[in-house]
Image (cartoon, rainbow, N blue to C red; front, side, top):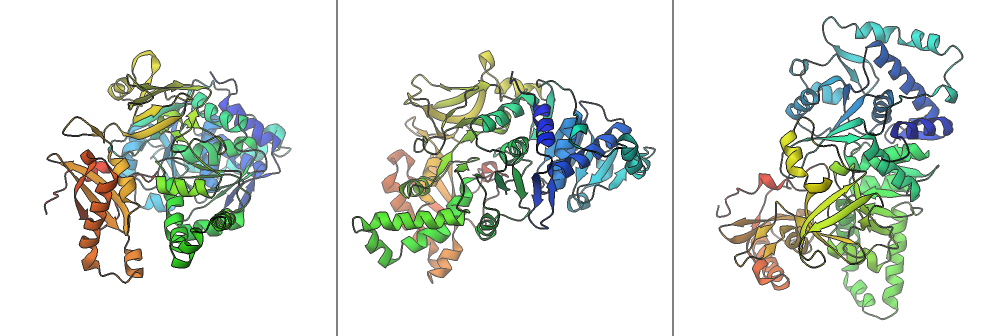
Length: 557
């Protein structure tokens, strides 16, 4: 059990960081200090008390990243209730299902999300509140929530006649082993399960961030990952809040253009991101400049290349705000070409490994200890083993256990049983190896692994990584049909148009790409045909392709 209590970590931070900035809305520039956020949290605690909300009751939360989202999350868990964060891009039917399946008694949602929901499909809700201004936008018949809201301000003054200050902050007394959150995943298999996360698992991630000084008091964070997803939630939000950092919430689509402007303005001291962001910056901004004939010639001259790469690093550092300690990449594998380039210019980055079921962190190494192509080493309070007779050389399923582990899937005993092996080990579904020093290397997903004709294990992710580096490929997906491999490719139409290439010539270009690809992969990994796909592939919130949508495509059409 983690020694520090999850709720007390939050309580102590609001007390000791009262006058520091806590949350800023990037779009409106509105900033809440820790004291102002704590005061709003106290109002919400009174609301919950008057509405007869009990410790352990579930409260759902859906909306874009805003200070009100963060304040609601903290208010729920510090009251002792269970938060159910819902990703805002879930479709309405999924939201209805999650609210009902989780037994939620309240829902906080943005006005935009509420417009697409139907209250009659969530009959057990006592009330729905707007995240835009905390007004009550729906109450169950016969429930006097509106009356409670009307007299909440007078009740607050009566409760705190001398005003609300840091000494007034006193949150629920709830043990770490108690359920704190149910997180509904949206995975590549399309099956959503409610992951039961205890206060202990959250405290495990937070205290790791504190102990390693990933974040410290006064640090600045720019959060552009969805806070309803475990990765952004644990570090951009919860760890940042518990240390007294200042989180700016970017509630726009995080395109490279938008992000680079925000980095310049916020100047974050640590950056948590997914590979897609760095890969887009590399392909759209760095690679074209380096591919120019004059630049290629300069890079071929000894000593001059080091100076050029140093300048590239300087510009990339400046693009990210120029003061960050490191860039931490998670959520999906980083393309090797991009990783090689970042390492060549000595960019301060590392790649970690986690999953919602571990709230989320499993492995990490600081940038100056990071081993190429790995995902770091298991956290001190986590264990990893490979289900293989030769874990250093033959990939097997990655099994984990430790303080960050979930308590199972909510109301899904069968899924919980199938996920856990003997002695408390949890099956991750990822395939990998581990070296003698404890560094973990991921090969791919167990469910996506393809068995070759001669028994070879084929990991489509490894083939896709190489294909994505070839000309005019934006993204790809390798599938197997009748013993052959086929690649679906969504072309980089922007690059095609910039090169004045006719779209009619793309089939010829992709066939050349196929030949090039087959020359650099194993013979058993050869792709029979590249098929142009008309749109971007549908993705999960952490930007992994939803593979299950494409496995039954007709490759002959």
